[in-house]
Length: 194
Image 1: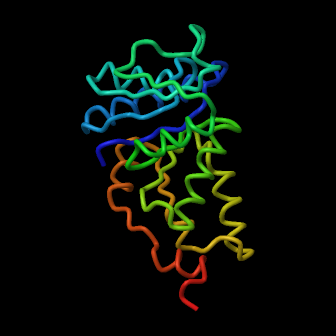
Image 2: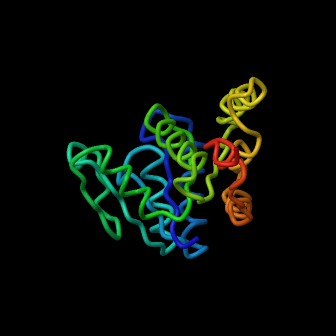
């Protein structure tokens, strides 16, 4: 993978471990020569991921929506900052630039980006790896819900396994490097094998 899109929260009133994990994720991407694609912000985990990558000599492309391109929110020290008119264009641009996706803790926007990316993998729109950096066990309740959905027949086991889960950036990148897209499950889901 030459580029990874990171989805994460922009809230500032969070535990310091979340911000530190963001910085470490950015550093790990830079150390592996991977271009960071992210939402272009300077606050919360978003800012920490970008700062970590930049401090380690990495390249960072931010994609921010016009309404958020303000001195209070936008990171002005990036390698490249792209501005889109709408949030839909922003997500589409980040998706197009990335060869993989990593989600760190965040709120509604982060969940939206994660599940859209998972859904697109489920129906075969892309075959890119998807990972969760499980800082402070943040994603344990989410994984329990996904396991419940699988148990109830709403999620195929192969689709759940598309999601790498790890506590450290290095473990997560290693897991994502072994990614094999569940093509047969996509065919079953899309009823192409009947």
